[in-house]
Image (cartoon, rainbow, N blue to C red; front, top):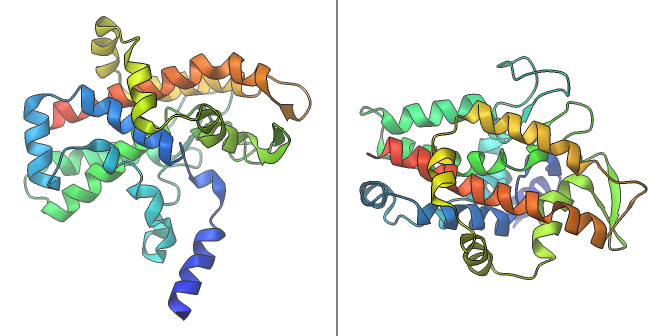
Length: 253
């Protein structure tokens, strides 16, 4: 019982800025990626994991934050690019970009153990999703919008939480319903282009898009903010899933 209480306290006191899309967002991204996996990728992922449903893997990297043994991973979910800079490895806090490369290497490494590859895959699909949430490419000033206090339809929260969960949950769709909704507007030529995008390209996309996140006056965020940002939100969810599929299709040829 004492151990459970300690773990619960650790979980409740984890800084919120460490989280990316909420559970529904990550599942949406995972389900989109599943749609565009090749047959070979599905076969090899199933051999490694016992299944190839990416939506089931996407939240593990957040769930383990209650385990002190994974405290080392707290800064793997985000990176920092100040407004007037390009990304420079290890210049600013946040190791997401470097960890993506590490996990890709592990998954391709024939000498890596099955457990190492399973962990690498679960982190990889999560972090790629994280970096498509614009505020996970922070400006270095406000912890990815966590220090920006706002009201979301009269509920006290912060800007980061609005983008992680509030905008998605506001639409009252399950992750499968939301995924099916996004797939209605797919463009196959864009999908092929997005699947070939590098991590440096999509983190700079997030850096540019985050300007829109801060485009409001006062503290009350309601319908206007939702409608102004709905298209960006859904594009980033969709792109995140497509890019996960592109990475996994290359890894599991």
